[in-house]
Image (cartoon, rainbow, N blue to C red; front, side, top):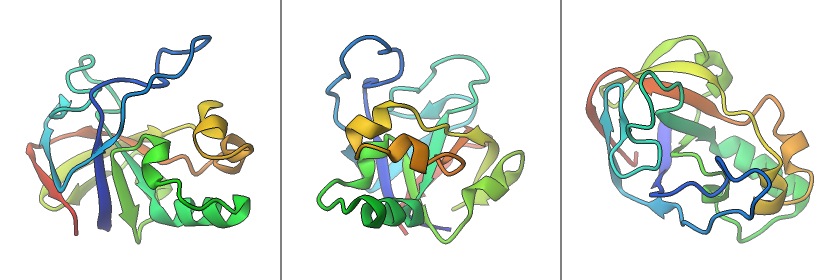
Length: 151
């Protein structure tokens, strides 16, 4: 698995905003991120969110981003629009649901798909939520401390 982008955000834009306007906190691209076992990514909105949280880190396939750019003729919208932490290349993330896996010496447990939501239609393009069904990314728990870097 290659890591093309790493993002953190200090605040939620969509999570907990149902029925309210979206937040405006940016996704900040970083060259590396500190993974803390059972806690999350240092500096991210889900860091220490709650005990045993299934989405301490999120992954999204660059291949899906490319597919959506082509499908909706979108240019200039970065992959950060999906509000996932790690943009990967070369792995089918759905195969990691329910599995332990390792990236750059850090161990993870894939817990569930990052189910796409209606905000995706606003953040990327109308129809994105439906187009991402079954391919919204991966939520995972962090099992060991370590650093992820662009690769």
